[in-house]
Image (tube, rainbow, N blue to C red; front, top):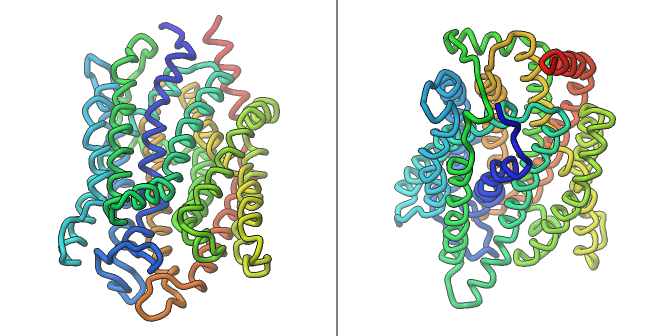
Length: 459
């Protein structure tokens, strides 16, 4: 087997730029787009208010079901990929086949065309659910192939740094959406047309990047795999029987759920709680992204020196503190709101850097640990099992957030100040729980076996 070059790793990680764009579109702007404030100028396209069991909104219910569909489909796609006998490899053919529908669905989510809220509800449901299916068909094989191709521990950390870097830079472009929309509106377009044109441009860029790995990477040059023969449920049972896997997965469940609360409400925090105009939100988001990128080299070195456990715990503690600080936003001077917001953005730079780089790298260690012990490559199944658990948590967050933000809203509005403060409290609590779980992770055992297995393989 060839040793993969750094250039090939960089090219392989490029699709994460597109994933960062699409994830920002859904996580940061979906609720803002479909539960608009009066200041946004956006029309009301879907049914508003509580529509199910007196606590769920349309968008919360649709997105939550989408996450469930996504989670349930993960193990099935992983099993198909792990057992694939395609002459092009187990992973790359999936990337080539599903790049276009993945990107197209991300755009169509925001293109509901009807005057009837009910028909738009149906449109939104169809394309959100389709998006999650195609996301799984692309990302599960993509995620599984990286730790298969990169066998050196230090290089694997570097690979996930590139992986995260592209995701964050893509997210950063996504965070610029309000500023881009403002420029387009100044050119005479309506707010809704401006938002859609911006997302169309993101989709064109995204689909090109999604295709790159499938044409520059020859999977079989770098990977020789022992395909699992066990049925899907047996493979999943094996994954969850691994104590280290359970701990890391549970930690990522709570940490990811806390992050989901934050991402879903960030535009509300900036515009409604801090009182900063929508078009200036890019300053705050760019500050946090640039700050986190500046910390990437330090986080990379820190994790190589001390392991990933300590940085993860510190990152989660700081992020929980950031979410609780939001609850005291009214105590800060109103005449210096921008200064306060920029300082807050710098504060969250550390957890953003840590939580963007290390979770995937930590999980890759656990997966490699299992491969060394068993001699069977089940990267796809492990990735899917982890994804199943974390996405179920995200679906819960997705249901709760739209319902919470309505708390305290005045008649005719879909957002209440009291509800926004509640989202910060709940997100902070979830993140603190992840600290307790990560503290139980036995990283010394994991790395000891991996390094021992690598030495044996090199003899």
